Length: 155
Ligand SMILES: [Zn+2]
Image (cartoon, rainbow, N blue to C red; front, side, top):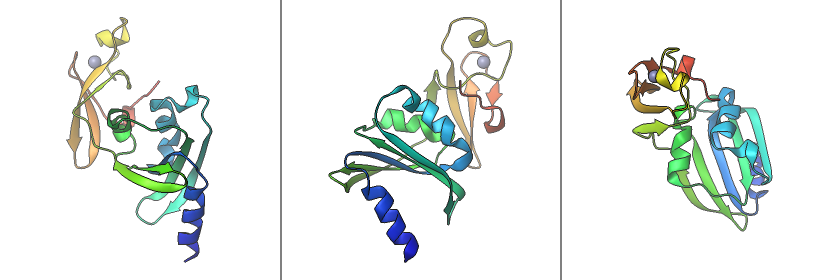
């Protein structure tokens, strides 16, 4: 009862914008970085280490006056495959979106292979997404080395 009430209040605090929920807490800042939220002037509030019944600790981000394209949303599948987005208009949730794991990813993560051409020349990285038991890893288009979750580095 209390929980439900709290949730409703925190979402309705946003007049227009997007609430990104169910982010693993440890990946909060990666999501912010992937979506470029650190580079915009929109009002952003976020919270980490919130209790979640299904996920352990989760994080939530609220961005005012910003709506994402599905392609943008899918980029966060790397670190937050279970994230959900609530689109808010006039304090109401008008749409819910879920993250879909994309087949390929360009220019977000770095290749784990130090000898890879993308680490030496000014070439954007490109990966095919490989899913194995819910774990997402990236296979480099150029050197074919696998970058797994543990080695995932997002500049
Ligand atoms: Zn590579």
